[in-house]
Length: 259
Image 1: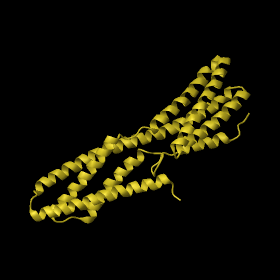
Image 2: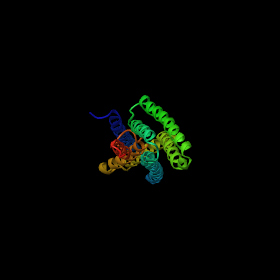
Image 3: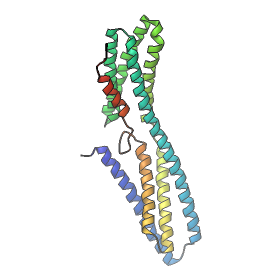
Image 4: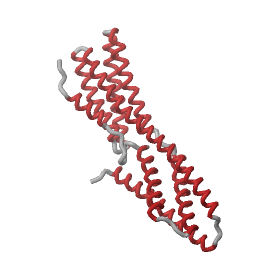
């Protein structure tokens, strides 16, 4: 049984391709009608086709680069957060045994909540994971702050790493809410439709077309649009940011620690 997000992602890809292909066929039909009436000038159509396809290529290129950049940033944040949790775990060796045990228990719980935040399938589960993470922030900071007061020489080592852990929570939360502006996405869709329409209409006016090549062009445009949309929502769909660094960390935290 496929997850609902995956099914929706596949439907989005199929819908984009079907919509663009229908647009191609419709304007090809209109182009043939215009050819019969001999009302079009092929030279003008070639200029328009080149302009629209060039503009589309520019928009797709910039949008893909932006989506890929956000995708890479989210991957880096997961690695950084896993490293920050691991650093705090190691710094716990500087604490007294009772405090160390409490802190490491809290870190295990925190890691579970960070994984749950990514895997959440609805807003309720996501908000719950965020709330539990923020509660654990207070617990971690309180224990480390008290330990630093008792040993001022440890304050720099202890508090800086906890502060980084808390900051990365905010950074990941902000990154998860950063998406392509709706206006830009709408412009991409309109540009794709106009470009495919110009190709179909030009082929119709010419009275012939290569079905394989025009369909392949439509498929590539739809595929690029789908990839941009999917990368912009990396917790759902087929192109997902990996959680492996956090899962590996969770396994390492479950191992018994030497005294």
